[in-house]
Image 1: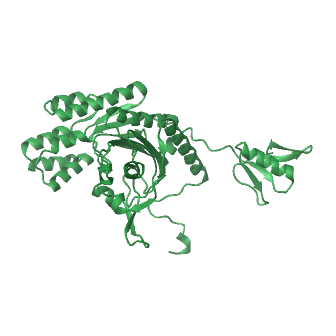
Image 2: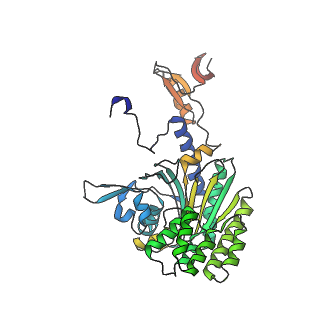
Image 3: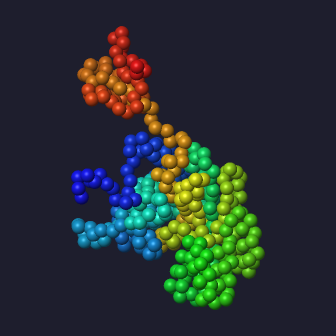
Length: 388
């Protein structure tokens, strides 16, 4: 690498400069504080873990996006987290071991070997909340309500759409079939990508009953009226009917609490790292191609850590959200103070900083921080005045 391009960062890796970093940090603090008022306790999972605990039981898709390297101290394989949700599940199941409902929240950097969507970076900063120990649909409704409350607090002014589905519908329709593992993977992938050509190709090779179910499910996405169509199409599928009831209950909660949020029902919503087991959702902001938040139910992860606990939660992409936020305002412009060891000057600087103001001492090279005020000595007293 020549000296001319030593500043280059790896593809998909970015940095946040002072103004944007300040906005993101202000937003992070605000959202975590709100999570705390809902009873969600803050945890800080490690950036790296042994891959046999970081990835165990989570499927090949998360494994493929996890960056791995050998630990020089133990010789074992380490992974940099690509998703914090499984770590929160480990903390609940093993590190805490609490009985009853456990609510946790977190915020931290992640790293992905490849980006998960076009135009999305490989190093999202993820803020999330997880609710363990409750299989009730009320728990799913709570995390979605919390998520939308956080977006409301962030001051997102663009139109918001909640894309909602249920993995249980796919599982109910295809779990009892005798599909070969590779064929089942292709079916899942085709639905996940909503690839009409691939679905048409698969239909030709599937048993008529399975092919019909695949075609019917692939068409069930759109306005909330999709639920009525699904009830008719799968009238004899009891598990599907219960899943539709759950979706309707959550959607009614959203309608009553957030009437300005649009609802889009997608019964082929299979995004994510394929550890979800029930209701799943994503939040989109008008004008942005990728979701700002995703979540859903994942009841099986804790089993690999010795406690099979029901769980549901969400994760927000903070870098995406800060671009949509109107309330994550930067701190007030700093006050520039002269350098010196006058006790009264130092006391004035300390007092201003204690009150929450930013004070930067001019060391002689100038202060370029958008400063609009200066600390000056007037009639024997240090006071703040507007810069000329």
